[in-house]
Image (cartoon, rainbow, N blue to C red; front, side, top):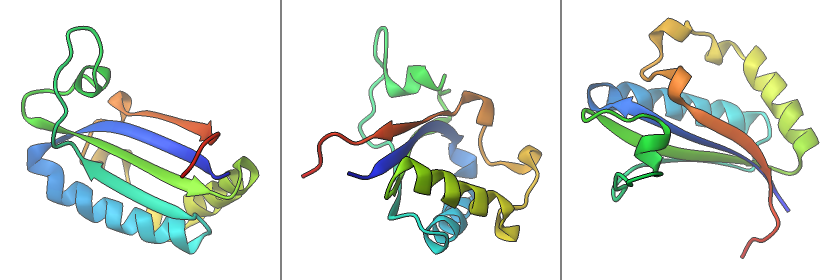
Length: 117
């Protein structure tokens, strides 16, 4: 079963094209280093919940869109190997100050798959 890194973040609508370009480069880098898949999704039907929701989780503002993404790997060990290569890749060099979103509000984590169809 694949190992999955998942991400949820809020991107200002004004920065969406810059985010898409960053994601295109990231997807290329992750795949070049051995990820099985790389998926980026822009929220289309993501309602604000009363207690919990994707927008609440990332403290999305009115001028932001929620992005949900994931990367799959053969295993956690392969994920760790791929991520080390990704972080050393010169295409990933950039200042955190130039990110098109607030990284402090990004939610991320690694997950073991238990069911795929």
